[in-house]
Amino acid sequence: MATTVTSVVESFEYFFHSLYRLELVNTVRLNERNEKELLSLVRC
Image 1: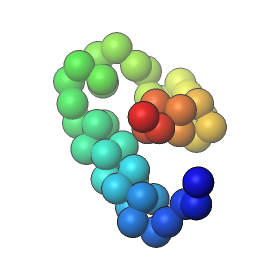
Image 2 (image 1 turned 90 degrees about the horizontal axis):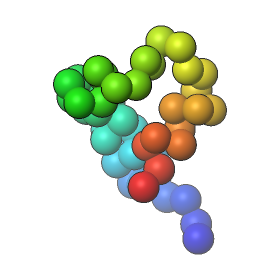
Image 3 (image 1 turned 180 degrees about the vertical axis):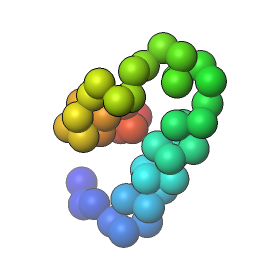
Image 4 (image 1 turned 90 degrees about the vertical axis):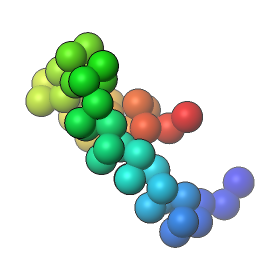
């Protein structure tokens, strides 16, 4: 499965918008996780 620029941009947009969703922000302490741990949350 090839990674395209479009899929990377869509994943980043999903992650960025998820930062402002209350159900995610209240359950996941984003400031206590590193980038590698957060990437697994973005991948669906």
